[in-house]
Image 1: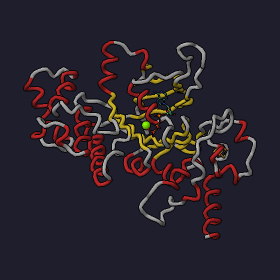
Image 2: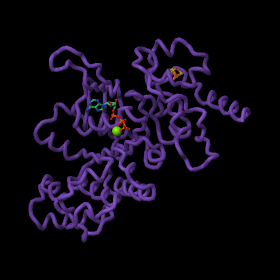
Image 3: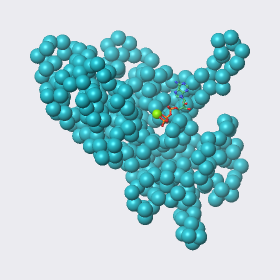
Image 4: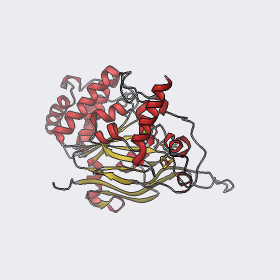
Length: 347
Ligand SMILES: Nc1ncnc2c1ncn2[C@@H]1O[C@H](COP(=O)(O)OP(=O)(O)OP(=O)(O)O)[C@@H](O)[C@H]1O
Ligand code: SF4
Ligand SMILES: [Mg+2]
């Protein structure tokens, strides 16, 4: 089998915020490490789900991909070139090729601009300057996102949340991107509308051969769309695998915890095991050791070894495409089974 083509490669990317002195130079702010030594690839044509709780660094990673933030250390490669080395035409091509779609379609559209106005600027950036060219491109684009051409002269207030998200997608598509970074694109929408927008992503990805980074705190969304899923915890990549590996055979106790907390709609589903959730209170800054150790249910089962507190686990390959950052990842499935039996016996 040929190697998949890599669009983005992140190499040991760390991002820190607010790690400086105050204006008078008196106080040094503690700073936040939003991403910690993250290495990952985005392959051509894949949907990579990026999951994790609030504050885990998902948006920061997305913003680094689109060039809205720079990594504090580490390197980001786009189509084989470090992003910071892109200049001139190559930089313009990068900016056009990688587009971000945000969570809230109610705030991401200017209320005083019609759909036509919104799309016009994108077409101008693509060099479609003549009216006839643009009109043809708009007529082609609107049905692609499931909207009628008749909507072009309407203002955002005339549209529902789902329709607005379709307009936001159309705006992103005007420049013919090859990568979409979608940051919680359905979480502000009614559940009934979410499926329609997710289906639109599926169709667009197939028709336009897009690579998509789907940022979501909702594992159902990641499960629906993703080829691979990356799990972030406090800025660290703790597990990476195919959709099936993560959803059915996860090796990191944090991923198991997320799955157990995820609503599935089926009370008997194996994921509905709230006894694995643990304490969600964020810990004070911990130095050294495993970043998950203050919440880890597996650590207790494997008799609280010192290693969890003294040695940071690195992301290690488990099987083809599947890797996890836990010293005891080989024991996760068995330990979860033991917990399940205990819970059933005490019920
Ligand atoms: N511009 C910024 N300045 C300071 N801190 C920031 C900034 N952006 C993000 N952070 C911090 O970095 C960490 C990661 O934030 P990020 O927004 O990437 O998380 P997230 O996973 O997207 O969370 P959510 O699910 O709530 O959107 C958080 O602690 C956040 O407060
Ligand atoms: S290394 Fe230890 S604390 Fe960290 S996830 Fe694994 S068992 Fe839990
Ligand atoms: Mg976010």
